[in-house]
Length: 325
Ligand SMILES: [Fe+2]
Ligand SMILES: [Fe+2]
Image (cartoon, rainbow, N blue to C red; front, side, top):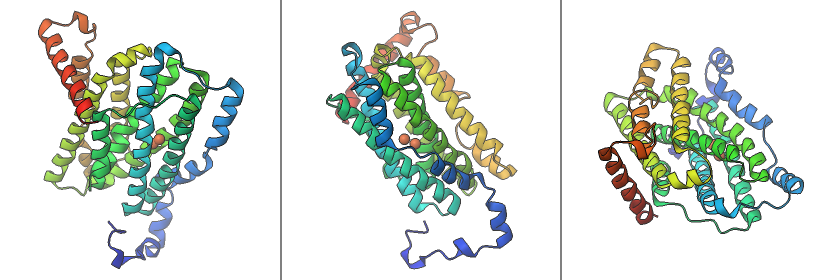
């Protein structure tokens, strides 16, 4: 929390560390994230204007409009939250390379937010308010004081869900401006995941047993919010031609890849052991939850008890989504 303690500012040791160590650190991929980000900055105003010039004013198919706007609203406010969270990470992270990566991410998220806002303005449709479950999840990550919780919530969970939604919307072919705009987002978001992959293991290995359990509990609570929020959107996804089971499986695969990459870049055994403390959504509980929420043979073919629990859960989720909004 270097920048919280103003008395110890400026942090002289950032530039005074041993030169050999610094040379070695320059090879660190984390630092490259910032420079790759800088080279790949796209001009949001120009990209959107060019796409509108190419395809004309965007217009949504009336049968899919309501569902599409609901998902776009989640992405819009998710981008605003990601902007605030990455700016917070940039201020608080006590490591120059990771600080650079978070700063680059904050710049990207700012662009993601204003371009999506401008796109929605070009559509000319009122944007529905965010559902209560998504709102609570984002607030949870915004408000936590723990850097580890923030990184797990943002880089591991929210970014991977956003990536799945972007891909799903591109494949849904809602309208050409959005279809060509979202791949710009996807490239940036994939890079953002890198900050979690490379930096989170360093933090995890400093945690004691109790703190590690708290991280797993935070992760589980976030997954609970994501799954329950997903239930409220099941029919919207269907209306857009996005199969909810495929969407959930894709998200879990992304999260599992992130955890696997953390292990691969883990280096020391201690660091790999620390990553093992994270829940791997690709193993055990993840596929089981997906199979339960989205039965492989479809809800209609699931046993009666299964359908009954899902119906109660979905009803509860709908009520909570309105009550927490
Ligand atoms: Fe973003
Ligand atoms: Fe992002």
